[in-house]
Length: 219
Image (tube, rainbow, N blue to C red; front, side):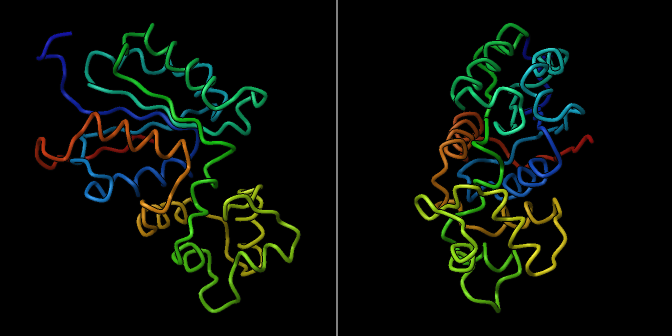
């Protein structure tokens, strides 16, 4: 690959629009991530989580000559191989990408069990965005509904979000994930998959390099 062929910073492949909106929200905050804003294109795989797991390499192969880095983001829940660990699935995807021309230039981030695991930081913005600003504390209510917690996070994060939204009669929307990503303090999120995402972006796009660039979204 020559310098002339490298035109863009980052191509991103995600499993659904919830992840898309969350990443768009995160990438709108480069200073909070400690990076410079990459010039990126984002695709949603038509086969969702299983497609990202099994077909990321052929999907992204054509872009290996014109992007510096590739990122694949999906949920472990629903990928079809839930019996495997997050790390095992990431290793499998990254091996496929390496064979498709992305060696040492790509990363997979598997959300465990799903994107909603990122939501449950201890930020007060979580309650507000989910519509609980004028109600008793959301976690107190969830415990009263039988939800169990580990390290301040519901053990069933997706079901907890859905229960909260039903109670306040707020429709589930991908825009909620973008709003959370734009507002919640990133320092409060201790999720291992989020930590890997942040480390990869920091390694690829350190803040001291290069100026602002335009972003492109491909649906």
